[in-house]
Image (tube, rainbow, N blue to C red; front, side):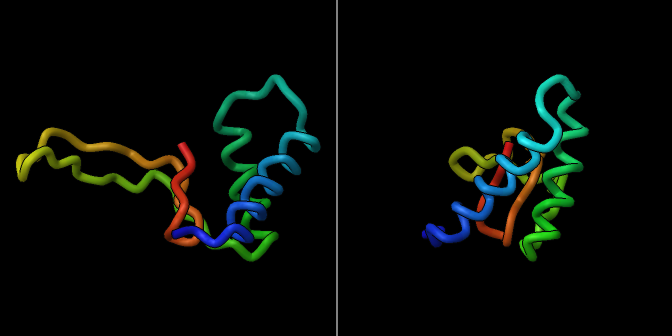
Length: 76
């Protein structure tokens, strides 16, 4: 279970990026800004992690996770 304080800090970071940059940029700009803001907040984040997707013990594909925060929360 994800601690409510963590989700609050992640949402707050996203809001800070939106309030600072406003609308109109491509997704990668917001992603880089969010990664910077998360780092400023002391929240470890990683990007572009590839994972295997299994269905009943069969590999059916791969998926790329956009951002993982504190190893607990996936942002796509």
